[in-house]
Image (cartoon, rainbow, N blue to C red; front, side, top):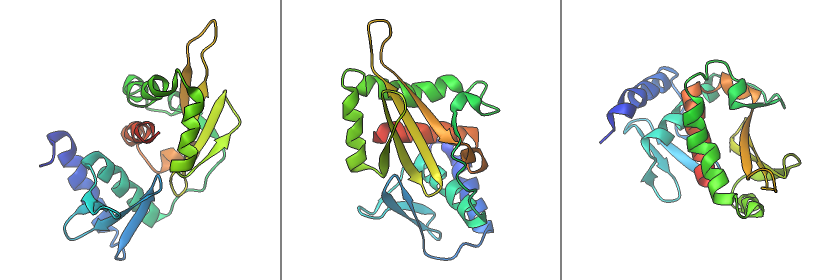
Length: 186
């Protein structure tokens, strides 16, 4: 049963993908896990377990696939914070609560532990902040997490940066959800 909040977006994402007449079979990697897309049953399936993806993840994957079929923009190498995107008014608190705060809570007392993601996810170290890692969320979709350790004056802090191409792939609402998914996988 789909929640009312996702039902309309879920239906529209499938309709948008169907209009593009994608070639079968479709699959996509999301943070290293491969998902298959069943166009007939309208399901996104995690291939190693054959479990259906949650609605919010399915919507992100379908939006990505639609853009991939149309053609993905190239990576720019320019890192932007969420606040630097246009149209984020009213979304920042949700973004911070879903993504940045869980990272700080999980790694604030042991920042080096975030490097464990390098062994579990498609990620590499980045020199920035006290600790930085770049994650390949999808092909051509990179996310940078910077973490700053606590000191005598300030508590631990973190921020999430996106390659500037992301706004040509996802809307602001999708970026909020995507950042939350990244934080949950860390």
